[in-house]
Image 1 (spheres, rainbow, N blue to C red):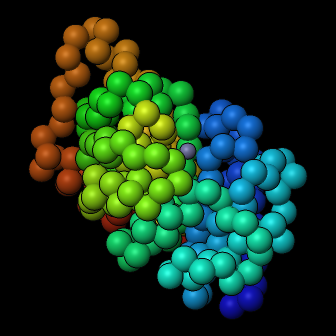
Image 2 (image 1 turned 90 degrees about the horizontal axis):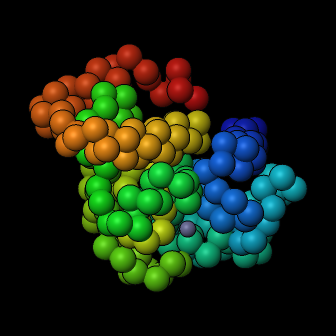
Length: 217
Ligand SMILES: [Zn+2]
């Protein structure tokens, strides 16, 4: 079990570097967490991702208490509430990527008009009502608007993506960013056509059947 926890921590650290490298955040913004026995590990507050090590991660329980480490990300409420609400989510990533944030700024949802978005998110990416960053109110709004999907936009702020692994949560955040970019371009050509809800749900089922947890992890 100890090795598993270490492997999860390594994935979180690697994802931090990837998030920066892929331009999903700048500086120390954004945060990453993953479930471990007894709670979850989360990136610390204000630490440069290029210098982040597994020992810097903060272990929290599902009551929001710090069990190991010092100061968790200021957005820990958001991660905590997603884990409490969604037993199917094993990892959560919060980013400020540009095209998704443009939708968040305009408070415009990203429709399920692209098949791969439907596969990994399970439908459109809705916009959670505005609340100040780091608050429990923001966390509640995120859980409500995310519903049973795997990503949500935070009004005037950014994106939250969940996954069955850290790697899948990263895939979700990248897919939301790509779909936001496509939506913006499609709107310049006309009105994007949204997939039928039933078709989108079928694609999600197909994705789950084809890409089991083991293939993603
Ligand atoms: Zn943020």
